Image (cartoon, rainbow, N blue to C red):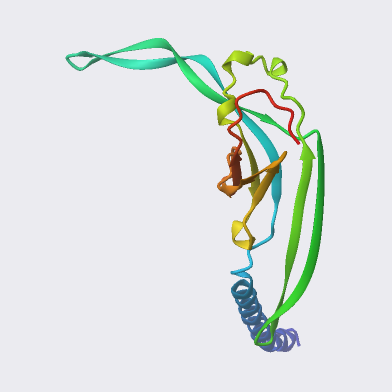
Length: 197
């Protein structure tokens, strides 16, 4: 009897494995169809920022290898001028989005996509360099910029624009945030301390 039950279980496993194979194949086809549909729309969007970035000069001690000839090298500590970045978040930030969803079809498969008109409105306060122990004379105001991180720029349809006070500045591709390469950046090119909208 035990052998009969074991044989019956093995026989029943065959159609189960066949059904599982068909389900796996259908799932792979569905994922491929959704990937095809959404390829031109971009993937999930994550926005980081905006962040005000202001470069500053500082001196740092580094170890340099100086050749002395005859294959000998001497290691010396030297002070060099370096450039760092100070990052500031807005004091006030409002995000407004108008989102419309749409269902696209590919054969028997569907994929939901969306269009969103997103605006970020905020205000940066006067940067506090004293808290970061940065001398005001070392701040490079002319190289200041605003940057945002966007996970997939393929999803953008229109040009991204930064409305900085009364001036409109184009946001060019590329984020300047550490560890977040995709996004957009707008140079400010200011020459004096700022209190910016």
